[in-house]
Length: 435
Image 1 (cartoon, rainbow, N blue to C red):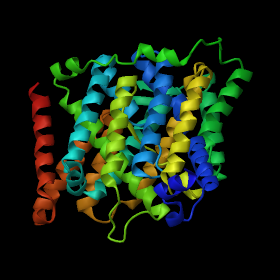
Image 2 (image 1 turned 180 degrees about the horizontal axis):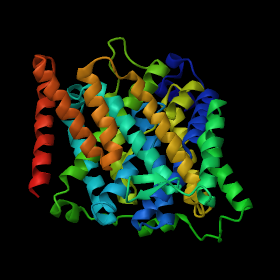
Image 3 (image 1 turned 135 degrees about the vertical axis):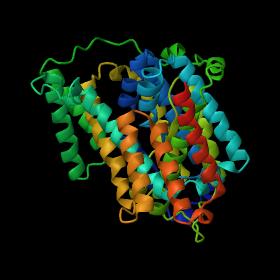
Image 4 (image 1 turned 30 degrees about the horizontal axis):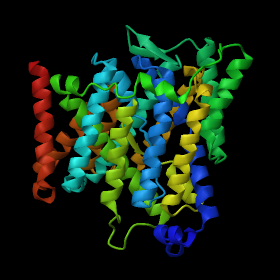
């Protein structure tokens, strides 16, 4: 049995073993375990029960990671995506006034569309149609968006009638603890501590407890808490409200996030084929889309692959066994979920800020010397956080890129689907104005 599994996962081909893959899976889990704290903290602001979202977060991360490892045989772990959970909470539910049940319905529909696009091979064509130069800009814009939300949650940035936003009262204990958390995590990252996010969140929480800023009460969270959000999605409501824009954002941001993470992790692991293609791409997309559907049914936002998987790759992970180990650890985490309940904003906000910083780092790949690329990329970066809308950032980026390609006589060098998407985005702005 053991030898059969080793052949299935290609241990000899990848020159690896059980010990190395297990260690890699544990490493990946440690680096991304902060999502157990941060995702429920964000989604619970929609009115979703914290206990239920916590269990759903662990469950869908376990399901997605195990499926990715078993089906696609990649050391790629999945969990609810940062940025998409912020869009779900702050733009869709709080900004648009959409009930969280309906928003979950939109997540479900985006997952189903993902599956259909995967089976039809269209998802791969979309990847080819979207300018790769904008991938990093979208990731960077979402990073700024997340960091902005973290600074607001920490009360470091507050609303201002004169300047829209301004510096908050740094004498407040919440702001001071959040600043401590940012510095603490930054120091850990500077020392290359792999679990910097998790240690930072827990360390800030402990300091808050010592200064009597955390009022903990014994929790009764158990795996059955998931009933409060499980199968509570409103698919009919999402269809009735014509949630095309919401579904579109869930769809495309997950697409960008997944592709960027996939390329980064597979390149580092040496898993990309000689012709620069990624083997078993359909299986990877299928696992990702299915995890999103399961996540919406359980009660959480879109599930996507995590760049923290590269930490496991750095530890030697080369096969799906590493992802399976990570998934099993998320499964075990369901039973320690009661510890998550008392985590306040000042402890999770630093993680949001510095996850945002990591996402912005990819903007270095943008060719800032070439106006055809730099201008659309900049518009994407700046409009996502300032409009509180990933869809708007995508719109500005794609439309401006298409216009500049046409204006410089390079239209034929781009896939026709790029221009179709640009027209759809333009129609979105016209429709919004007319409304």
